[in-house]
Length: 463
Image (tube, rainbow, N blue to C red):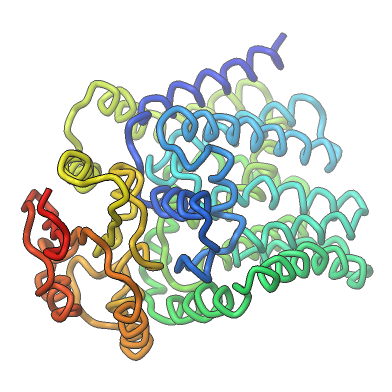
């Protein structure tokens, strides 16, 4: 009875929280949605679409038909159920009983609901890798190094930080490195063969690994370690119930391997010295399993008292779901609302078959406007060299030479019918006319909206 009630509660919470954002497209999901839509139009990832994330990320969005709304939110609901089920199975693999399994499932679903909304709702590589992370370490702990390596290899095709999952698996399978690495190599080589067959292997290496490593070398904060400590403490505060139960389990069981697993996952968070909320999902697998153990072995009244700490994130993040469902304005969605307005304008004045270039990191405009990309670039980062985590307030280019090469390549290709400058209104130094002056002279300003300037090619008939 308790098991059925818990799973029904998980399902209800997942459905209701996701449907509150039915009409919202976060920028983190707009990017893979736009790439998946171009793939459905026959373009090849990396060769025809500049994309700086591993190939499995946009491929998963093909399962929704590259559609926002109901398909995307139901996919998110199914993912929450999958992650909760994987956590329960991992506990079972580690020898935990039914009570501990239910705690693991419930805590996983809770962590995927009551935290920063853009982090828990947008299916990013860090979030999507959680079930694979759990399953891989569980396979390693159960004595299946090949399966553990296989799952880590699949995860690498989704998230480059999956190398840390492999290190965690090695804590249990250090005596079987060949089988662990053999399993890991299989999906990685299969993915490489697919990319090579499509002529995109070199482009993938450049966009995902070289661009990604350059991104990681540019910390956002001036004193990154202090920022790391501050953000980690903030995250731990919202997850105080998880952390307290996990500490109790570690103290009681003296499990050094799980403690090291936690440290390895913390290193995955710190890689690149950017501490966005979504990166902390790398900590969730070891923390959930330890916390489930802690709650399960505590006396019922002590576990209930500790569970009251879950009210902290519930009270902080729960009311916002209702506010968004009621249509109340929210600063975090201000740029999305401007994209909705720009998309509505484009749908009204564009013609069938016309194409779009979005200037700035606002790929949700492709999704909302339904206009296909007119170039291989879905945003302006690779064209300006200024990273999106700072380009609203800074014009300092991290990769100027690379960006110059990309702009030269852009000029040699066909010009899009529309350019939507979603960056210039916020940072004039990065406006499109500063980087493509020869192009912009062939366009006329068709509309100026909050957060956007829409330019239309003069060589085509005015809409």
